[in-house]
Length: 125
Image (cartoon, rainbow, N blue to C red; front, side):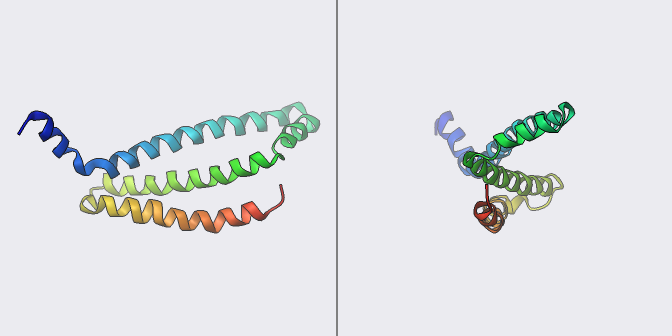
């Protein structure tokens, strides 16, 4: 068996772990971008109520409603995957890592997302 075949075989079962790793990093970056936007908006309050209200008026566009729903999903995925990673770091559930990712982070996350996203979508912009 060639060295390449050994490497491929070695990492064959790592798709879930690498997917979870990439999702955790990507959602972390999206949350960091949101944090800067949030701080920037709150900073407008120091310029007075008129400047703050003008900044808030920007967020009344329907596109921001979709971005708010995406933020909600990002927070859920990042949080649940973070809990899964913490459980693994404590040395628990290494043999159930794949199941925990798909059932807990994705499955439970999808249920929580639907429970929260539907009211967000139906609320007024």
